[in-house]
Length: 222
Image (cartoon, rainbow, N blue to C red; front, side, top):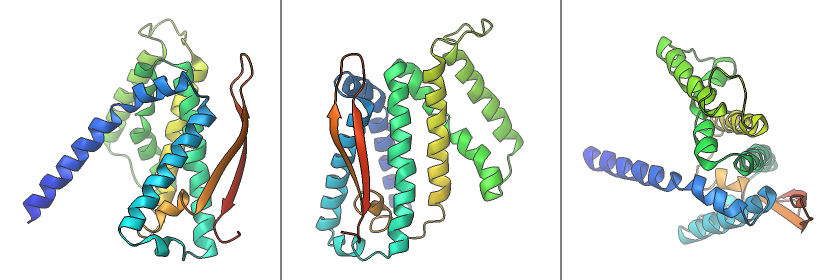
């Protein structure tokens, strides 16, 4: 039985990697037609619908709606980090950088998580962690300079900064999520089902990206 579970876990992991490998292309194609804030809005709508249907199908939607005020406020705080801040920053990075540059820069979140876990979770970095981090960020340097590692000239410093900034937001989200003991299906989905993101009156102007008004309302106050 344990071997079967391990095989299923491996297949799910490989499936996740396969699907995640397509996001860079999907982001770039979408950003040709939408501003970053608009893309985030549509992604949130799709996420809410998907999670909502899953909970309805499993008969657990009622559990989501029985959260306390503290639960919803905590979900709201996490939701401000991810998806809001994280994906706005990430989409802005993809809007400025080629996909093959933005994605590997964003993938350094794992080492960012290891670094932030030291002061925030009291963990320690091993020698291999440090070596791995040096290798990872040497790659970041090569990507940011587009191979001209000794030229000290960045092709798009704003885009690189946004991509690296997104790793901090992602790492903080996962660190704070470790303190969330609620059921993953009925607790954490409140970030997107209990917390409602509304982006309205997006107006495209020549040479500018859309400007959106954001209103966040948490369930229980309606």
